[in-house]
Image: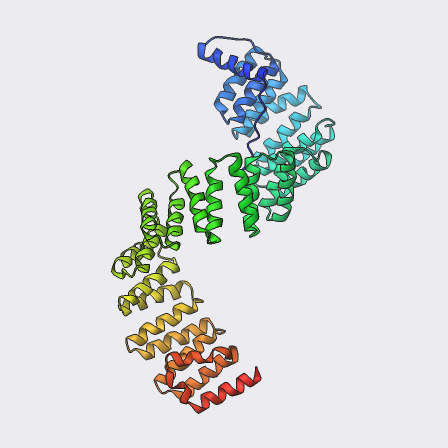
Length: 470
């Protein structure tokens, strides 16, 4: 979120805008001097009302046809509208009249940037800086904005840092340095400059919000919460700050506080299906399943294809052991997001609870296909085959699992168990020893599926040898 740098309207400025709009309303002609027209045009540019700005510039040009200031404003409007060729036509005429006017050079540089001619843009900017003596930091800042507009943040930062050296109190420069560092992935430096900016303007809602986002990148949760909290103190209707704070509190398992934050969010933004879904999750974690279903349903009413909310509904019914009901919701979530392994895993688990082992295997195989490193999915899939007395299939799954996860000791121990069940002892000992090499402390895993393991002398000898080594 970029900073909205509001102009401080004094009484004279307000009066000019009121007189101008009164003139338009009455369809009359009032006289405004050049500086008043500049304020009027800037007012509409600040509000991104480009057509109104153009209209004001045209009226200004009629009243002051020889004013270079008005011509410059027209060129600026055209650039703001993304019309660099038309702007360049005006600027070329102006440079013949005002040969040393740095504003013309800066706007030409911006036009060249918009045309993708960055080398020529840089030459214009350097030329402008060579003839600028007053407010040089502002000129550098405007040049930087031109590069920021095209996400050339590294180049923009170069000019901003030069501006900072000239004026360390320029709030716009401080803000944009922080912004550029953030975009360049230098979060720590971004925080430094947001703090410098806040030293100058402690009540900047956007600076606190952006700093909260940067702290999130740094996994500094408490600092992020404080930043979002300051943002909300300044503007309690900032739904984005409330939403982000809710997410952080949810991650910290502070479910009651997270619900309060999400409630603040939806009080302003009542169409935020994510906030309702996360409130459902908070109530689910608190064991308040009635409210959990209420908020998951609210999310679905806003977006019928919101897979997370369907999944949340399924989890509520699953946790209440209503497996026939939960499966409907898991199926819906998996249909909407077929590549989400969490949904597929829960669906497989649900089928297991219903003793529908074939369907459970199919779901686990989809998980494995999408994420071959999910060791638990390989193990669970093999168990379903075992429940169907398809031990060879269970063995085959584990062998493939080991190919994808050669450092997983538990897969070797489970494979050894299945080999022993089939009385393939040579293969079983080999798999068991592979598990011991990786993680001897959990060797007793083999007992879960083959309790007779404690009666195998060779197996116990292997355990003794490897535990001594360790």
